[in-house]
Image 1 (cartoon, protein in one colour):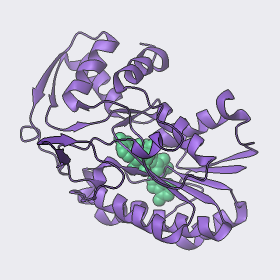
Image 2 (spheres, helix red, strand yellow):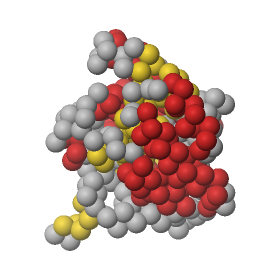
Image 3 (spheres, helix red, strand yellow):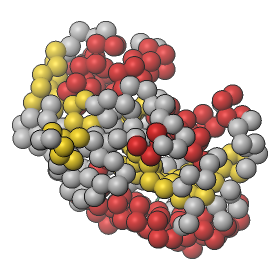
Image 4 (cartoon, protein in one colour):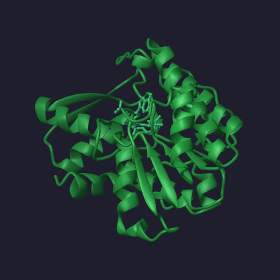
Length: 295
Ligand SMILES: NC(=O)c1ccc[n+]([C@@H]2O[C@H](COP(=O)([O-])OP(=O)(O)OC[C@H]3O[C@@H](n4cnc5c(N)ncnc54)[C@H](OP(=O)(O)O)[C@@H]3O)[C@@H](O)[C@H]2O)c1
């Protein structure tokens, strides 16, 4: 098996490379070769080059971690977000199909509008069959990317994740740690609910999926849910930083892009295929801070 991981300089891509080389996967499904691809080697917005590049390497599995991920900036740079998240996904899907490769494409909870699924008057997490309705440019471009993957590639996995943090790159955990140390007092929104997700847990599940033929749409997030405020409180607590965290509303903390107020996902497809071993978000966060960041 030759696995091509695209977007290796990003948060998830770099984590996937580490896990693919780890003991856990060394003999798994007989990995022959891990092909690490960054944006300097392959610009996925270029259709011709993407098809030629994939055609020359002929991977068995392509994992696409490349994306335009700046949610606020996407409101203004909508064409760039569209080129990477929508056309880039399309180009990789066409390229994967042309060499008969499986394509694992990463997507987001922001394909949903945040109204949740109401059961007995209460919001419940979105399942893979629920109707998408993105409310910001990032979510719209990611949804179109999903649609192109489904249209142009027959052996696809679309893996939606959320509120991701890992060792490389910028993320909420690192930002809160930095600001908490610098300022000693923080205000964090308390009216957006989602699933914090440890990139290592996600990478493990993605690689396990890659060796199956269980194609389809997956939700893959940390178990349990939190507001950004809850998330920040636990980061500060686990890191042992003396910092006051105050809850605020999204109206008090206005940003360019609207965010869904409730974007919790249910890992139903995982449970019914390879199994859902995603850890509870608090346990996974504590391990990340203590073991990975060594705080
Ligand atoms: N981060 C989150 O909280 C979150 C939540 C839900 C879903 N997701 C999804 O999870 C996936 C991974 O996210 P991440 O946080 O790991 O992203 P990230 O750290 O921002 O990394 C994205 C990578 O995409 C590459 N890239 C951008 N434009 C490209 C192009 N035209 N051609 C090739 N590569 C290009 C970048 O390369 P350069 O570094 O060279 O620019 C970067 O390495 C994405 O699909 C994202 O939408 C993320």
